Length: 369
Image (cartoon, rainbow, N blue to C red; front, top):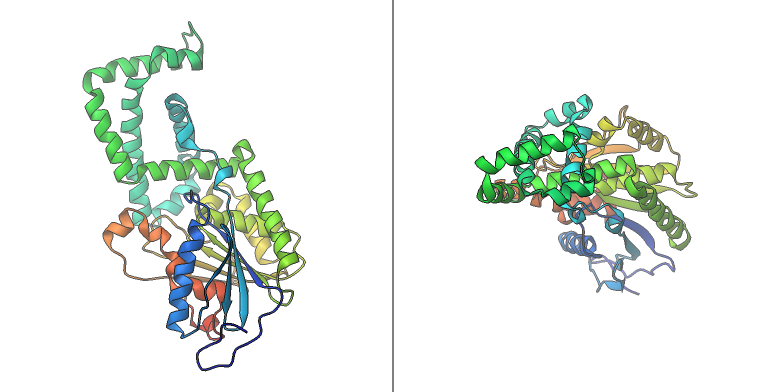
């Protein structure tokens, strides 16, 4: 006999728990890091509702068992960052080449630009990124030595691409120098251009399935879904709570997974609108998921304060789908340094959507606005 609502009688905990699968975003480098942020949000939500929360059972670094008001809820973090290509591990010349390819991939899509231009903050961030990237790219050419070029083009190569790089390098050495390059590099890091570069690179890698990143990430989630169906309480749906790029992974996995029982989906600050603009087939994936009979509900949570997220292009209204807009006041600093993008897990609306702590919660979510 554990955990009860204040003023209520204790309830028996079922033998099998309800299962929540938690998918983090692309920057989660520590296993269990997203679990800890969500735990803070759950503790706050229970406190606000006068719900007794017994000590959380840490089953392992990626699983937590909560006993809340007669319910056993096991939250499992599905860690996938180890599968994504790592931009920072590339050599400087490969970074330059991959950066150019990534910029061309996104900038060549009119649909992606239309999505970006709907948000002043997102459009401004992209424009600033392009300006800093071009400056950094040109100045970095001064650091490329002949041996680096030989490793790419081959000794004695006289192609126009190599000649152009050498001319640019020689010219910039007279006007740039190491101090200018250092200043631009600091600006790139402090103003978030590094993150934009990584986000664009990983997003592109997912869409083109570089190094089978998409294939292996979906496979990991398929295995987690199968295990959740076997381990979870049979009379309750499985819940998938997915943040940022994890939302794209969750949507595609759930659309393709041969589910044998109902599931719920909660997406937070997903990039689906931007990604679907670049790869139109994702719109069909979203449409097919909404039509899937096993989908009990889909709550898409976003905030206009978070310039890094876009709303899901769900198309025609579905009785199983709704958007939840969070309008919490955020400081200019937290919006600029992207901190607001990681605050969703401590927001009460997110905990309501994911765990349905009280029967009234389904009716008290903020509207799409």
